Amino acid sequence: MARVTRSLSPAGEDLGTSPTIAATDSSAAPLSFTMGTVLADKLSVVKKLGEGGMGAVYQVQHLHTKHERALKVLHPAFAQRGDVVERFLREASAAGRIGSPHIVETVDAGWLASGVPFVLMELLRGQSLEELLAERGRIDAAEASALVCQACQGAQAAHDAGIIHRDLKPSNLFVVTRAGQPFVKLLDFGISKFEAEEHLGLTTEGTPLGTPYYMSPEQLSGRADVNARADVYALGVILYECVAGQRPFEAKSLSELSIRIHEGDYTPLETLVKDVPADFVQVVRKAMHHRPEERFASARELQAALEAAPVAERPRRRMFWLLPAAGVLIAAAAYAATRSAPENAAPPEPTPAPLASAPRPAPAVSESALPEVSAEPPPSAQPSLSAKPSPTRRSVKQKLQTENPY
Picture 1 (tube, rainbow, N blue to C red):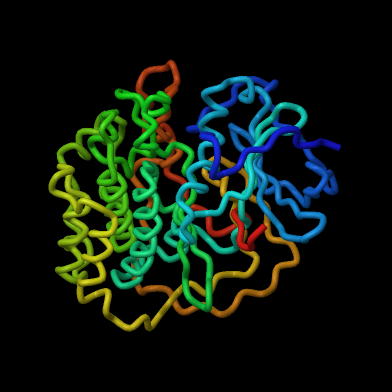
Picture 2 (tube, rainbow, N blue to C red; picture 1 turned 30 degrees about the vertical axis):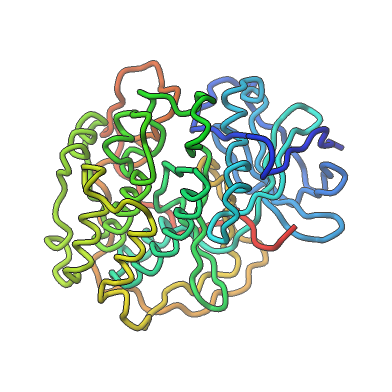
């Protein structure tokens, strides 16, 4: 039996999370917990939900309350590195400070008796926006606006708490259903920036953190003065991708992608989608302007602009979010590579017909070939982004993140 020997309050001490770092040594194998293993005298392991280069995620159940949670644990090899542990636990601190219903809830964080850090998070049932786009190709402006407005609420709550997410992207917008309506949760605050804590050295100048396709020019340059406008930019890119069915920027190398992003060199949305409302186009264009001062100053301003656009007033005639009851995602899905199929899943409710748009084209560059930019890039030269063909994004499988209070 493994016991938690130390625990940190999510709203208490400064914790931390980590960017993606590939494990290259067999000693980095994560702890393997079998079904029924009890951790901290109260958490019973149900099953492993995913495993990636940094660690693994398990579905656990509280022995007394019977509530189910997502337990994210770090590889033992990385547990010896203070900077990695700091970033790994950072998500717990961020969620505790924000306290928004649109942010995935972190219940607890600490260390197992073996010295391996963990984060206990809410278990969510639904699917990510990335998975939705893989299934439907694209969504209309009204649907995209409704989803991103909710993401804006979560982002604004984070900004009000002095936290910049810095890695907003479709896979980090997770959608559950509440009262029969789609409800957006923001995931993965692992590389978030605490504006009042720059002395921690977690977001140093010249070190870009995030996913390049959604990074603002100033963030891609590694500037230390990245602010809320970087998250606004990412939300603009997400809006574009939702409606166009493709990302605004594609390239064969990281340097080419950087040039395109810095110059704002992308195909106008109205060129790709003829019936997109002009007001919506203007909002997207302003949100993802390559000059920060030309963007909306806050997520709140972006939300207000979307709500003011006529498209936001259309009746929600086709809310596509009747999600399969068994779709489960772990808050750590940002790095968990494997996904298992739902067990004993209830049959999904019937879903409306998809948009009559062409299938989502495969991107010119494989997303896996263009890795997330981390604080510790590989020693090799700039990666080639055309090393392998673009895979089709997989539809919703089992993933993790939570839903009921602890």
